Image 1 (tube, helix red, strand yellow):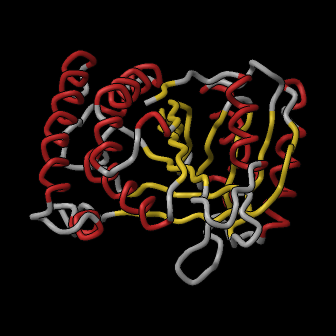
Image 2 (tube, rainbow, N blue to C red; image 1 turned 90 degrees about the vertical axis):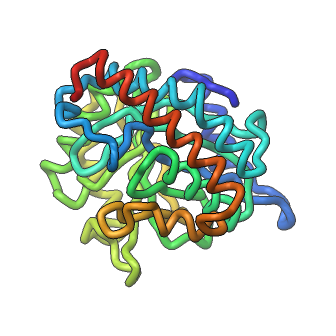
Image 3 (spheres, one colour; image 1 turned 45 degrees about the vertical axis):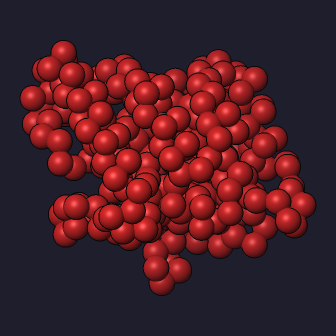
Length: 279
């Protein structure tokens, strides 16, 4: 597993990897899996709301070091062929430390990997996206900043400003290097959750970027992507049934091995919770 900090060289490499490289027809697509390591369910953390970004990033980095390589291996993915980083990620006006994993896989393999990650880390969903896919039906906008200025505070300020301009922009974002990516994700009926068509979505973000001229913000690219959520409703399926079904069922060797990693994840999180007073 390669762990890389947020950096300008990484941003350039990742942008080339996602948007410029066009694999041959027989090659697997270069996909991005976006998720968090702080559990969304089943681990009681009543004081998690007081956690700082730095604390969340520390736990997220620990999960990356300890758990993610083993999940990849269990799912038949060579950890050395995946690139993962800890970055700010936004969802519904909250900015938290997130994990972004880039890997070339067939779509069904990516969905199974997403299910394994979501199951072990107890996430309601993992987003699987292929940025720059010409046939994709999800619009995206990349907002670039002056090199070196983009951190968790700036990403959140931009996110809040975007939602203040139009609430449809408050769904979420991903930070990679010096760039924020906003996806105009669709629901099951093909309608944007934002309530905006792709052109309006891009125009609104361009207007927000104009208010951050001092940080060098500008719309760097607009395009299409394939994007989908692989998820489980933990309230309705507390045993992770939607994920387990994708992984071959409760009795499959993969799920049994992932259950052991879930126990290690719980230990990791609770150690941090005791250290930082989250429970």
